[in-house]
Amino acid sequence: MKADPHRSLEDLAIKAEKDHKWEEAGALFLEVAFNYKDKRDFEKAADFFMRAAITRERTEDWRKIGHLWIECATALEKRPQGPVTDLIDPVENTRHFFPTLDRYAWERFSHFEKVGRAYRNAAYHLEKCGANQTAYVQYKKAGDAFVEGELFAEASRTYYHGLLSYIEQHGELDKETFKKLETVNDALIEENKGTYTKRRQLYYRGLSGKLIEKGNSGDAAKLFTQECDVSRSLAKDDKRYIKWLGFTLWKYSSLYGNSFWLWTLWAFMLFVVIFPLLFKGSGVLVWQEVVRPPHWFDYVFYSLATITTAPDPSFYLTLPGKYLVTIETVLGFLMLGSLLVLLAKKIIR
Image (cartoon, rainbow, N blue to C red; front, side, top):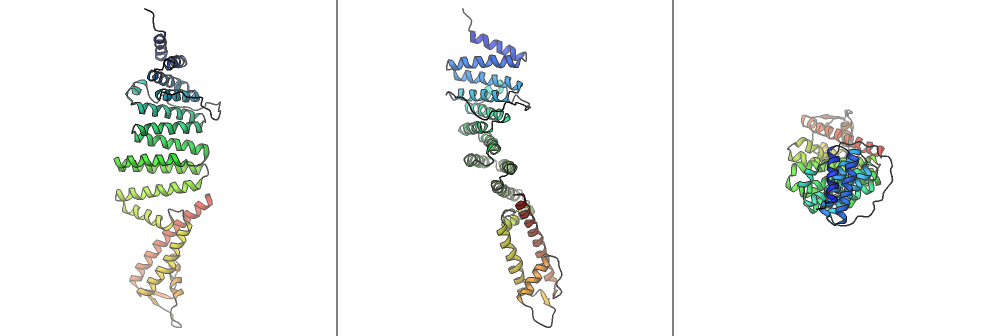
């Protein structure tokens, strides 16, 4: 009986892999994979594209590995894949600790997890050689495959890395993928609120940091606001009420240091309207001058003097008045802190 030449190639590839001859094993696995693809045995082809990829990972030739993972994913999807074009970067100088998985782990994955992991591995390796736009496309395909298989945790992680790759290339946030990320995070939070709310917080922080790195302070500020909202919610859930109060005051006084006009409105209302009215109407201040009665501006001046810790001898403080002045002084320091954050952000931008 005539021996199957494909089986012989498989044996040679497996032997080369066992002997740690990575270049030879990768080339043989690739030849076997294309043989199965030509025969339209796509599941087998995908398995050998996977094995070719994880042996080639040992050689750290990132662009070729990325294309192998795309071949693996598209074989699983049973459709042809045209050439992948992107920025050309001949320098392959990154280091890595791969393989990310082995063939024994691969066999336990569902169909959609195989597709998602194949596209994500393609994206990772293409990203490492500077092909960020192509990497981003593969991340999106990976995330969509994970969503189709209801693997929302993997989809969330994948969309996040795709957005980082997109920001690296374009300097802005892709709204469509960000919306997908938010949708899968909502689904995860319904399953486990504590764990996945913290993950959402970290994702906001990572994306806003990347946007700042690329000089996009506008989108970064929006994400920072969302991160602070999550931090405020977590503080309440964890019963850390002092932290929750701090975030609440920061939110409504200046939108977490992002709204100068909101801060100005609150500063005016507190120190020019509310506290002068309290001083005047509550009788906690005793007027000291005899040549004239107090005017409205005297109460305004006393309020402003209080937040700048400058004494005003025109009034004498009663004990309840000292309590009220202490509250105003604390609020004044908090508002001053918000102002410094606002000014710092304006300078950075």
